[in-house]
Length: 110
Image (cartoon, rainbow, N blue to C red; front, side, top):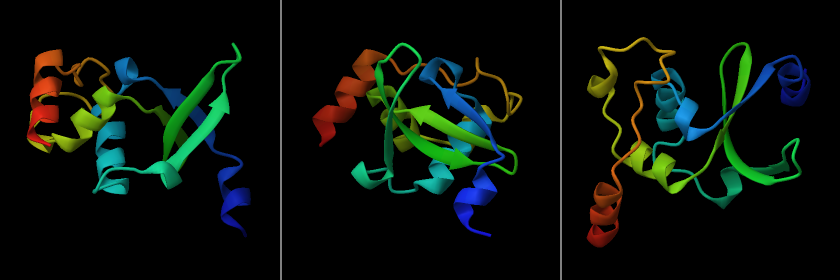
């Protein structure tokens, strides 16, 4: 069976940074250990006709399309599994938005 047919029955979930959970963040870091690039980005239009860019991660029953953003890139680059050990895997409160000054500091390092 082709991968496309196998994935056809998966539940599809679009995930914004605000809804990102430790489980999905971990899947992203494992799927894209060196970060994602243009080949990994999927573009589509949402119900409002807005263009969305996302990266895909799969579980047994779900295809997650995680909207890409500077916050997502920063959080993936600075991922530490220990930061999330006190949270449930599906807790969207666990992944906190990076402070703008932290993201600016990170850009200064490049």
